[in-house]
Each structure stands twice: as C-alpha cells, then as structure tokens.
Image 1 (cartoon, one colour):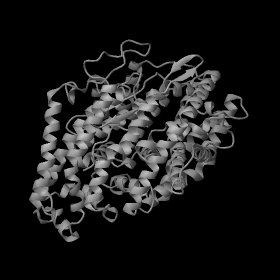
Image 2 (cartoon, one colour):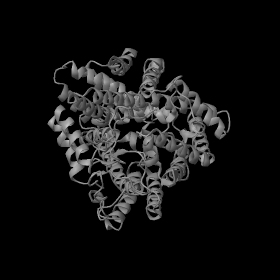
Image 3 (cartoon, one colour):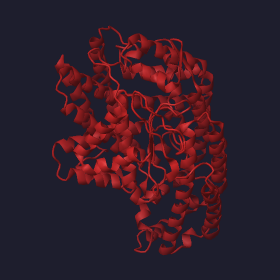
Image 4 (tube, one colour):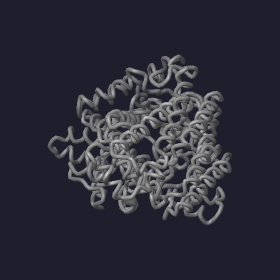
Length: 609
C-alpha cells in the first residue's frame, strides 16, 4: 500500500475567518467534511478501525492471492480500496491542518504521530503488491478478464506489475516501508518547517517567503531588487542545510534505486506516471531546442520594453511599464474564473462553484502557512480542498483558475473510486492548465485597449514560459544533480553551479545574474517532495495547447469528450485518452504543435511593436 503522504505543498471550521481586507473577505477551509475537530472522537475510532482492517486483510489474504477465484479477488481489491480510503481520510485531515500552519507545534506533532501509526499499521499490507506481482501471467489474465472478477481495476494492477523487475524481497520492502517515517518523510518535514519559518528583511520590513517572492512581480523595480536580494541573503544563510537535505534525499533515492536495479533515477517517476521514457525525452528535447524561439526571443523583447540592455533576475516576471498596477479583489477573481468556466460549459462552472460556497478554499496569506498553491483531492468519498496564497495579482487569478481545474478534475474522477481516480502526473495537469487557458481567452476576448491586450498577452507568454521552459530547466537541474550526487557528496557550490548552468541555457544571453541567484534552487519544494515531478507541468501545457487547438478548430463534441477524459481519472493510458482528439503524445510533432502556440503569442506581441 502507498501511504497517503503529507501534501507536497490549514484552519479548522471553528477558527476565525481571514476577515475583511482590501482583497475582500478571503475564505478559509471548513474541514468538518473530514472530521469535526482535532478532538473529534471519530479520529480515534477511524485510526483504531484502520489498525484492525490492516491486520484482518493480512490474515485473510497473505500467501493466498494466487489461489483466489475472480469473485474473491474482487472482494480482496475492494477491501484494499476501503483501507486506502480510510488511511487517506485520516492523513488528509492531519496534513491539511499542518500545512495551514506548519509552525504550530501541536499540528506538527499530530501529523508526525498519525504518520508513524499509519505507517506501522499499513506494514501489514506490504505483502499485497509483492505477492500480487508474483502471480503467474496466465492466472493474472484469467482473474482480470473473468466477468465476475476485478476487470475494471486492471489498469491499476497493470501499472503495479510494471514494477515487477524492480521488486525487492518481502523483508526489504517492509523495512523500506517502516523506515520511511525517518527517511524521506522526515527530511520533507524539515524542509517544509524551515521554509515556512524563514524571515526576509525587505527595506526594514520582515516578510515571509511567499510575500517576498511576490515582490518579484512588483511594478517598482527598486522594490523587486530589494526582494530578490533579501531572498538571496536568507537562502545563502541557510544553504548548508538545504544542501544537506538535497544530498541526503538524492543519496537515499540512489541507494533504493540501486537495490531495485532501476536503470535511471527517473525510471520510478516514469513508471508512476504511466509514461514511456522516450515520450518524456521527446518532450524535453523539443523544449530545449525551442529555447531560442521561446524564452530567449521573448526576454530580448521584454528588455526592449523595459529600456534595458540586460535583464536582472528581478525583471523576469516584472509587469510591463504600460501596465496599470491594480489589485484584484477576491469577488472579482471568483467571478472572472467562474464566468470563463461557464463560457466553455455551464457544467464546468457548476463543478467549481462549491469550492467558493462551502469552505473548500483557503486563500489568505498567514504566518506559518505553506507557500504556493495546491489542490488536494483528499479521498473520493469527500471532496478536494484548494490552498492559495492570494495577494490580488493578475497571476493569482490564473493560479485560482489552475487550482480549480485540478479540483474539478478530482471531483469528476472521484466516481472511479479510490484506486482508479488518481491520475498520473502527466495527465494531472490537463484540467488545471485548460482552466487557465479558458480564463486567459475569456479575458483576452473582452480586452479592446491595446496596452491592456499587450499586458495580458505578455502575462500569458510568461506563464507559459514558466510552465514549459522553466519546468524543463528544473527537470534538467534534477537530472544533473542526481547524476553528480552519484559521484559523491555535493557542496553547496557544486549544486549552485548546476543550477546556474541550466538557468543560463534556458533564460538566454539577455540576462545578467546577481550574486546570490545561484542559491535559488533551495526553495523549490518539488525537488524535495516529488523528484522529477516538474516535467509533468510542461507535459500538461503542451497537451492542453494541442487540446485547445482542437477545440478552436471545432472538433465535434469536444466538451463531452473533454469531460470523459477527466472522468477517466487513472483508468486509461494517455494514448487511449487522447485518441478521441486525434492526438498522440508519442509523436514528436505533437510537442512542436503545442510549442507553436507560444511562438504565435510571441509573434503577436512583436507585431504590436
């Protein structure tokens, strides 16, 4: 069993709301759909029920899987799914509370205690995948084709059996499972608590990480520079700790991969994503080849707009000089996204509306709150929760559209059940990026002022470059880091040099890099929580660009086909899901089609000159 992890990136129903601010009344989570409070007796009851269920499952099924009839195998799979749901509900609650305030000692202790107990209980389930993968192929085919068997779950177990060549002995697998709470999970918590506790002095004002990063999009260039230099100073002051975290996690992964005989550090991610390595390589190569046509070209254009010979890192996401500074209140952000969703399909807006109405969003920036944004699906018997750090920037509206896309996707896929609802990362970004595109297109369609249109187009290009170019550069950074770590311990200077090599290549010759920028790898949570996750963003953007082109070209029944894609969750391979749209991600031309949309936007901006 895969232990439900703490979220990669909360407040209870009885906590005070964020209250009236210049942004409006920002919503907070109501977690009562999971549990009423940390003192809810149901928490202890469910934890006890989980312990019993795990022990009973092992007692009934261990050493007997290959001898089960199809009907009994279906009962077994559904019992396993019930356990997965129960553990997921518990971990979702304690994880959400923790990430809402990672500096609260009581929340941190509750997360640690529950994680340890659930890890201990689910050790009883480690046999399941190991023994399942030893079932002979002919028996497996019979079990999963019989009319009274678990045929609908076959995609889950096909992916599980793809791990067969890398499976260890039962004893070693149990050891790795038990050891996880003091391994990667512990280093993840150290990273989260460290970043949440960082404080940055910006012109005499103490700020947290999220607010300081937000300064990099400020209209005032001096303010942007202050923010960038404050970030660099604090990152440098903590660089030895961040270096230790990355060294340890990379080495731990290398040790486990070595025992499993994984051919590359990326293999495990590709298997979990149900994507072929050559497809990822085709994506990576297409994007890197396009750097001069995309990021280099756009940033040279931006330097001219800003009247600069060279760009500094604090200019990368700067607003245009002609762009009027404005803060977007929360009610306007909500209306903008819901209207854009409704323009595509009223059903899409209806699926998104409860997030606003029922306490499924936590939007405000608060001390100790996890930085960034996420949509956590919890379990299929409840509903997702969205975390934002909303500061009223135009990009924050796009982040809202993005995370709501995840939430809608998770709601639609929930009907598949716990085992089949989870979407591989390569497809998990589909609805989120599509939601952003819908919002952008809706705003563009109603923008007639040339300066506003230019600012909107430039913002979209920068978002796409951040999603495609920047994430592939992140992927290359991780690949180089893990390869270098295989040769020995890395100093902070070693990691800094790897970071700068990919940044210079991806951003282009128009950039100068301030002293200290070499440390900016240290705050990126994906490198810690989900190694090699980042290419999924570029995969999703390219896929959505191709999907949106099909939509604009008037592909018949596009909306119904799109909803079917989302409802499928993890029940189908990407080839099967994209076939109704006449798309194939294994075709190298597929990625060029997606990248051409970004080029088209850049060409439109050049034409406005």
